[in-house]
Image (cartoon, rainbow, N blue to C red; front, side, top):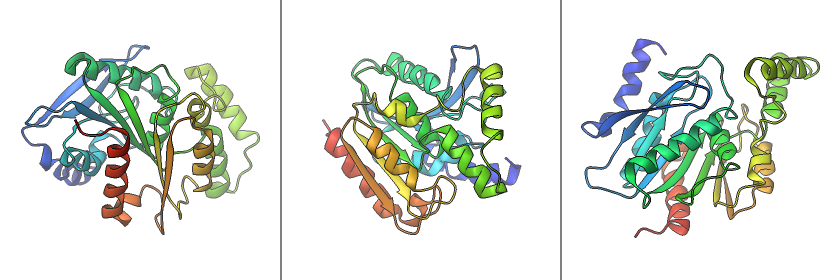
Length: 268
């Protein structure tokens, strides 16, 4: 990110002054991963873990962090592996990251105690990351998931992108790249599926998507909605392109999230 952009993004974190600190964990494969943690001046028992998108970082999630902070929650915003200040040469597309997020959840509980309640939230690749995390064995403190414009499988997303951006067929590029990724990093694009993970999920899931999304096509949201096994809601934002739902209608966005949270996680 260019320095003038960093200054612009830093401005979005003004709300956190005096309440912001750094956290780090070691991933299972030995990478140091970093996060920002914004805590309320008055103690609260809920943390929202916010996951960023592809080739972005936690710094870019300031507006979302501020939204949750103003709702009265603590907010943890990691830099995913291979992004921001976290180590890692390869992008996990959410699949490798899902295990890192299990570790972030454990880290929050270690620090805040067993009474803490956790909400998972993500945008774009971050949305797929939290949905992929949903299929893992999670502690009961994780209460609900909010996913904004995520893809259903890495294979579907890359196939769509090849056609959309380069008018190229998926074969042989996607299978070959998938094979290479399997050799180098230990996973293939077929197994990297938010849909398959959601088939194991019982937690309430809120799906948000712009109905004019040309990067992660809106049709993917229906696959995700069908896949999940817990209580679910889907809200489409009229006229919104990729990751633009919040910007297109901040009031509706906040209300949608607030109502969903209060339904499944009533304030004590």
